[in-house]
Structures are given as structure tokens and as C-alpha cells.
Length: 93
Image 1: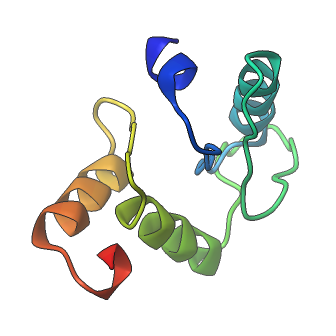
Image 2 (image 1 turned 60 degrees about the vertical axis):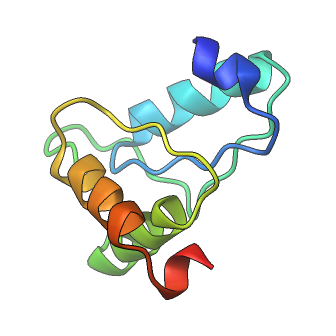
């Protein structure tokens, strides 16, 4: 996608789904980007979410403090990141 092609810094992948994590990592690496993430998420079928609350909180604040953020459309996680970026705080310094 265009946003990833223009990114200058490494791209942090924050997701709760192993299939999505691997697909994004492969696509970004194929574009010559250096994606990274907190921990590998296993593919276990249903349910789709396989991250701990602690990992989710870390992802939230990494994204809130990043130079740029690209989230998904209708996501409570994306909404929380946008709210944290808007109000600012120790995570954005």
C-alpha cells in the first residue's frame, strides 16, 4: 500500500491475529521495509485474538507514541490510539 511504501522508519505491527501479523510482515519485508512487533502470535484458529492484555497495552502505547500511525477502519484499538495521540502525554515525548 502507498502509506507503507512512503514510510521511512521501521514499521511496528500491532495486531492480535497471527495470520495478519505474518501477512503484514511478509508484505512489508517484500517492500524492503523492516517490520517489527512485540511477540510472535501463533495461528490457532478460532478465536482470532491471541494476545495478552499486557501485550495489547504495550502495542497501544507504542502506537500512540509513534511518529505516524495507520490503523484499521472501525476498531476500538485504533480509536484508542487516536484518542491517546490527540490528548498527548508521557507516551508522546
